[in-house]
Image 1 (tube, rainbow, N blue to C red):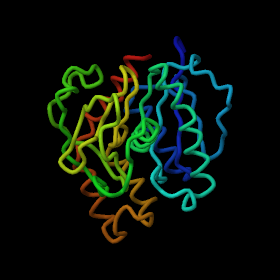
Image 2 (cartoon, helix red, strand yellow):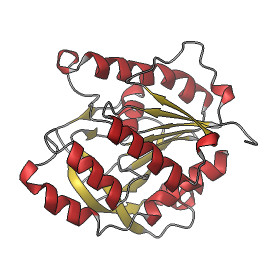
Image 3 (cartoon, one colour):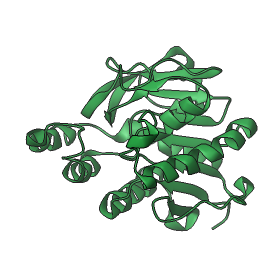
Length: 246
């Protein structure tokens, strides 16, 4: 391994979902396992002495938890995972350290910056939406080579309700305005899943069919629909992140 590894933080307590997500991040990001340090936060505790300088960047995956849920409704594992990721955000934003938060990560970033993350508006059922690059995104290096609109794989109960302070609005969709934002020059977060494709969503739909994201009877139709989506442009964002900071 020539350079520093990427720190990949995973939040999914289901092993099949976590392993599948990790493989998707490697595949879609153009990474080798040897270029990463993988930490499953449901099993490991982040050391308070963790040194960001040891890493090229931080990638945070998605998960079934919601930042906006009341503390008493969160399991002990969800609370610990959320606390671990939030504890990193002051240093990441202060230093403008390379960060890519996927789905759950946009809630973490926005919450840390003081914006409202809630279930009131902009939730999206599991599926594929048409994402649009906003004016600020046209010159962003992570969106280089992308068309103005592209397929994005989504599925979330909560969403960012307004653009957080000092953030650039990079990508929107008809049903959720804040699909991708940037804080500073190097801290990114997406509401959609840049690592996902139809196969990845098939795994997740089968695992989370009783988690309240959709009517369980719709699972087969959602799987079929997910396989019609084109993942290439969304995953280009993840590849661009890796290429920029590798």
